[in-house]
Length: 254
Figure 1 (tube, rainbow, N blue to C red):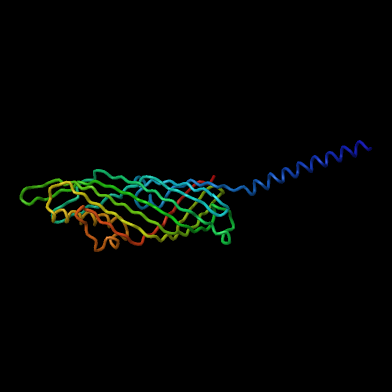
Figure 2 (cartoon, rainbow, N blue to C red; figure 1 turned 90 degrees about the vertical axis):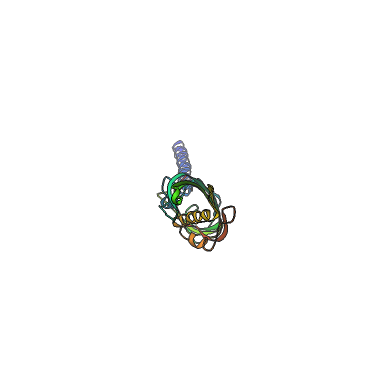
């Protein structure tokens, strides 16, 4: 009888210990959070074209309510629409290239979020840089002397620093949908239009204005940014203005 009681006591201790271990493992699994996100920029692809804007990002949770992210990829201007001036006709796109790089630091608002980062409402600073380059060939109607081909090399650089407000959803534990809803900032714009030809200064100015018009057609708000601005003797425009950031990312949490 005494041996039976000892066996029963040992079994109770064994199962009790196993139950506590299983309970702790279950609790750990329930509390497990993921700290990494890889993502793809949907908004840039929709605006510039899927084959013109391919930017991926990585986010890492570095503190209980903070994370850091970086995004990098190739970018290119959308196809220019046909534009004609009194003497110049856009005839060919020769080269289109560029890249995007950006970073932000996010503070997930603990009092506003039910979930652990990277799920929830966040605020924080950001910085971004876009570089676009495009080479085009134009046909110049040279009066009674026939036509002449003119090549232009256009570069647009945009540097922006600012603050953002966004929300990142985590669906089915692994699918991330990141929305940067408000992102005001200060932007610096450098537009350069180099002309490879022996045109007169007046003809070059006319062609540079045509290039500027093409850029403003593809970027909403650029007509305001470059309003009243003219190219200097080196064929460049330097200006600063308010910028804005709005991004949609889709990603995988791990």
